[in-house]
Amino acid sequence: MFVSIQLIFSSTVNIVQFLSLSFEGPAKWIFLGYIIYVILIVAIATTAVFYNHFEVNLSRHIRGFRSILAWTHLIGKNVGGASITLIMMYAGLVGSGVIGIVLSGGNISELRSNTQVMEQFIIPISGFTVILVLGLLSGGLNFIIIMRHRNRISLRTFS
Image (cartoon, rainbow, N blue to C red; front, top):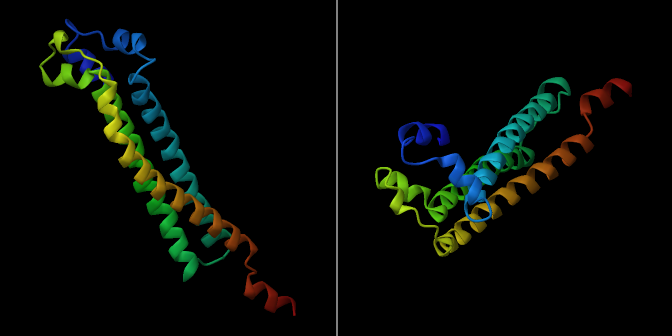
């Protein structure tokens, strides 16, 4: 996104210089949102590998209540986490004034940093944070239940 904006408006806007100068303000939300999004992608992939390991390698089938916890974990992490990061990036674009430059067709005079606008993003970020935390707590509880649950097949073979 940053590279394409720079290529389109290279004669009037130096986006890297702008963001480096205004990193103390709302522009840091763009980078934090993006970095957290990349970390979240790795965390979701790791979670999928763990669930695959439980089902295939350990033969611990995830059914019933554990299945509900697993789906809550995956949906909460995907919906809550992705929404938080996208809202953070959008809030950074709006608050730093970059979105005004893009919407005005590259007019640098439209560059206005407005941190007051960012206050409207607090409630949506908080709401999606609740969804993310519920997903993470259900996933952690599910991992504990799965690891502590005894495999009944292996107990029968020893008795």
